[in-house]
Image 1: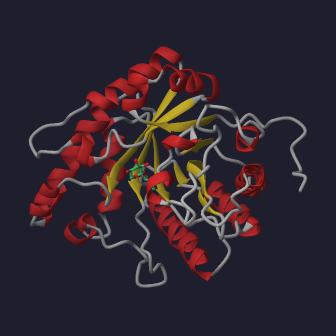
Image 2: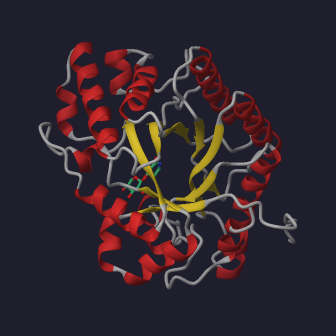
Length: 327
Ligand code: XIL
């Protein structure tokens, strides 16, 4: 099917998640990123388990390598993620009291944001905070931080990040904000409610990250997404697409068909966002298919390799690459 396209690209900055290990050993990967991206985001390098395998020390080696690469190439860097329930080291389970949890979280944010002050200009401060049963209670995921600190851990984290780098762009980011259906309506409602409350209290928050992990068997709700983006923007916040890719489990095996359907899914999302006023940046979660988390976390039932990203395994651009340049 033909895709309607803007007459001229809107000029939204584009980027991708990067892995330090690949930057280190793969010149083709480095060249592709420098060619295609205005910014990059740290895929795993700054998660707690990588940064703090033990409680006492911070290992900034991978993050520093990404920042160095970006600086040399003139790319901006986003940091992912200061507060996240996933990929945490086992020692976090030993935190017991509210005071201890708060002290540890404050120390983490001050140290990490402080280390990258001026170098990482945008942060996912809290990642994936909405509950998988979003219609219940406050709709907040019952993470370790919420259990020990209470709902206020979000505000606390944003304030701590702003204190460590007053110039940084601070986002709350989440998944399942894109699709048709009641469940997704509830998730959008939790996100809106949360950010409205924070803005009303004067908490330093600059935008909402829509992760943009799209699925071959879920339909992007154009009208709801456009409305959501417009509502976020009306609060004076930006929208960033933080982790775009297409989980192509149920798309046909045929490569040309599959690549076209993947591109159409992404187009549908980005077009709806444009209608709502546009995004501040759009980042895919990786650049080359073979590096995608979908290869091992979201495999196809037929065993064929997933094709979730703008470039194929040989770094050849696919239709999704073209879509990325059109917004
Ligand atoms: C994924 C990484 O891409 C993988 O390398 C890792 O093994 C698991 O996490 N949502 C997020 C990201 O916010 O942190 C996840 O990243 C993908 C889903």
